[in-house]
Length: 116
Image (cartoon, rainbow, N blue to C red; front, side, top):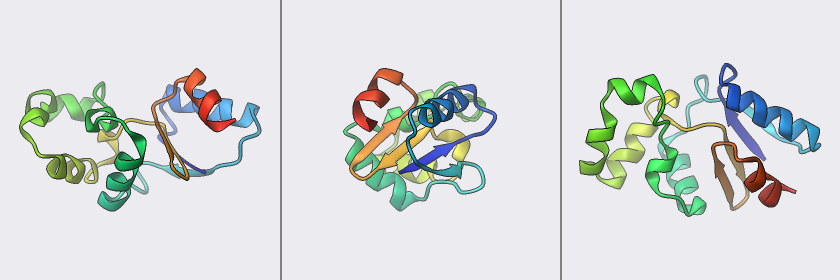
């Protein structure tokens, strides 16, 4: 299982603690040091069943600075995925990839259901 996170993010810290408390094994990946690639994002988006907007860190500074709230609706899916692959700070985190399961953000009930 891959756990993609940003160490300074409090939600990521909570998620990591939850994984540890539930003895769930994972491989850590720092989202800034190893940004998700276009191919990874495309695959995860396909498996997740989520809308592409859910992959964006909409509360992040970069998202706001780039005025993506206004730009995303006019961008193609392809362009959005390419944009996400340019900077890990645009990607909502934590992100868990476990086979065909892709979880974006930390919702304890959802994680308990999908990862236990």
